[in-house]
Amino acid sequence: MTKKMYITTPIYYVNSVPHLGHAYTTIACDILARHYRQQGVDIRFLTGTDEHGANIEKSAAAKGVSPKAWTDEVSAKYRELWKTLNISYDAFIRTTDPAHEHVVQAIFEKLLQSGDIYLGSYSGKYCVSCEQYYDESEMLPGGICPVHKKPLTEVHEETYFFKLSRYEKPLLKYYEEHPEFLSPKYRANEIINFVKSGLRDLSVTRTKVKWGVPVKSNPAHTIYVWFDALINYISAAGAGMFLCEGDKAEHQEKLALIKAEKFEDLWPADLHMVGKEIFRFHTVIWPAVLMALGLPLPKKVFAHGWWTVEGNKMSKTLGNVIDPAKLSAEYGVDPVRAFLFREVPFGQDGDFSMTSFKNRYNADLANNIGNLLSRTLNMLAKQQPQIPADIILPAEIQQKTNETESAINKAYEELAFDKVLEQIYGYSADLNKKVADTKPWELVKTDPEAAKAILLELIGCQRYVAKWMTPFMPTIGAEMSKRLEAGTIEKYAPLFPRIADK
Ligand code: MSP
Image (cartoon, rainbow, N blue to C red):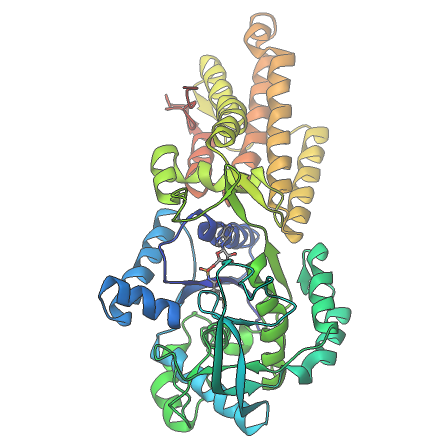
């Protein structure tokens, strides 16, 4: 059996256009995918759009178009942005794909048969924007949504429940036996305490929401958008085993969105990357559903933090939403990708400001990596026009390089992207220091062989820098590697033209 590494982003709601926050989760997965591919790991990377539910129905109505037309339009915007940001996903799922909808329906019927889903009725406080019920302990005083700060709506309806309460103990046992599952560690306690405080069965259908997957055996109900959405991770991986025979013939083929031989070659996922506000859905509801289905659980769910902008929440009303495509058009895609992961320890919240973007660009990219490359190439060109293929590094330099590479690989395992970049920038800064200390432009006058040896060493070391930067900067990393390859040194434009201080 050839199990592939399988990682996912959340699937994005199509009720608004994508912004920097969405791009963050996706770029993180892209960096990981590119790193592991570089390591020779067979990895598959899934993303997509979450297209059902009352909010999306409402957004479409506000635009005066059908939900289908609306979801087509916004889902396409996501794909466009991913193209702009150079996201190398293997598959893109839409929850309105009929093949996915059939799996959702089939899973629902299976859980109905096993008694994990049952019909009941519900009354409670619901937030239409979150598409979620809140109980007393979670809402703000006066029945206010803790996220949207708007009054919750009192809802009474007949609904199907998922027997989440059944999985309280098995979940706690799983967390204990698989400490990696709840990542980063500092977010684990919140989930463990939540489960320990007692799980209530979860309402998983709506009678008032029309834009959703209908329950096959009772189409007056549509399936709760989160229940539908989470299943994307297995339906895209080809989980057709739940389909009835007739549906199998029609949909099984279309399910295997990801070009892998079998569902078992992908599932369980190695990583679900999510933002902190949807950690609970992925670490409580989702594993319980998988347990009910008898499927293995994902190995890790990692929750990253949130970006604010100059101290404020990113919001349409505040007009401070950062458009990653615009930012990239001005400063380049690659610098934007790298900035997001150097600025903030992955997992924690961060604040975006143009000042820190420009400062880091100039310090880490223009003055450190970019300057080093142009200096070394210019100095070497004065001595010899060619770069040789093989450059053997002195033993102690090779050892330091190997140690840096090990530290980088370890940081990747911890999803500590900031530490990966810290290692690379630190290594490159040491090379710059070497130039300053040894002054090859002066040394060449007295000992040209020694000067040349230093320059070649610097070239050899930068080949590593280029390779390490490539997951973050796919285009510029490749360009760096090209400039450092064996061959004639040419006149090159700077990789990172300095951003002028206005
Ligand atoms: N549709 C659900 C996920 C279903 S997964 C089965 C959803 N979609 S979302 O579009 O609202 O959010 C997608 C991702 O974007 C989440 O991981 C979320 O944390 C991330 N971000 C949205 N705004 C963000 C910031 N301002 N900062 C960082 N990430 C944030 O939730």
